[in-house]
Length: 346
Image 1 (tube, rainbow, N blue to C red):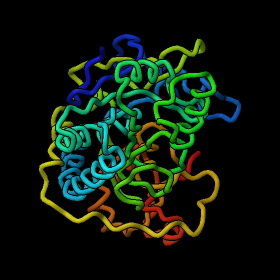
Image 2: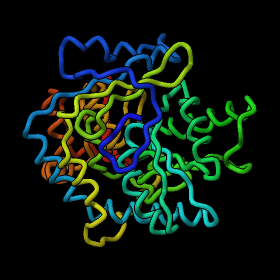
Image 3: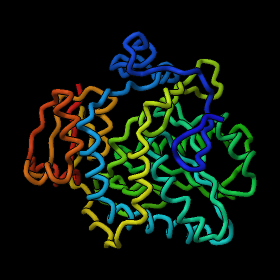
Image 4: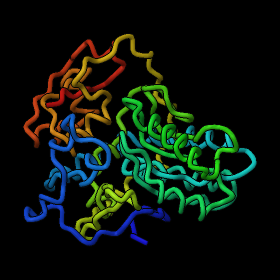
């Protein structure tokens, strides 16, 4: 079992060896924008993990400050989400299944809250899922076998384009068509996120686009292993282990300390989008942050003015500056798209 910095998290993936993601000699092991060409489909698109940005020492205090700033509302959101999961599963505690990578920090908050609710340990597992490929079926088979009396609740950080929800449903339909056990008791898979601006999750704390600082987490520092990658044989998805000395325990602990933050009301909900963003945009603030980490955006648009954004979205602005990506502030059209941020992709 590959060990992770998150308490009790069980990773279901193939160990493909130790790799330093910041060593230029290993660059060919990680994908670039060529993986997203229109003629690259299926497992080939996901045959390499995403790259990792080498962040300097200045990023850490910015990220930790953002976690502290958001902690009261993230705490409120985690507790609201745990309450909804508990209410939907009154008779039997579930098993949490984090969708890598954004689901892992959310599971780390939900597991202790649900353990208090049920008076029993809540196992937290993690596996990979990709757009156009679906979930790691071998990994899920093992999770279901390891926890036969618990219904999986799939956990991610947020929704944006709705791709994860779609892939969960498509994968489940294929799962049942192959005669595998229906772990939902005749329903549909449960999918939980902190914020659901797309409105496609089973359980969510809020519907609004809301900045979640874990969107700025990088894998060497907070997971210890790469994003998953697929193989032609359809077997268990793989990961590379990253050197333990690259981990940042302060990042992980700051996130876990969110549950000790002062009480706060839930952030306000947002009105549904009245318009769709044009083609070529990645929509919603957390997806924009991920694009700055593992994609190559052309420019970023923010709804807020520069002064407000510098207070609330400092890690995103830092990443954009480091990557040399243009940021435009006060873009009023984002109100109609129900988004705090969008990224124009190359």
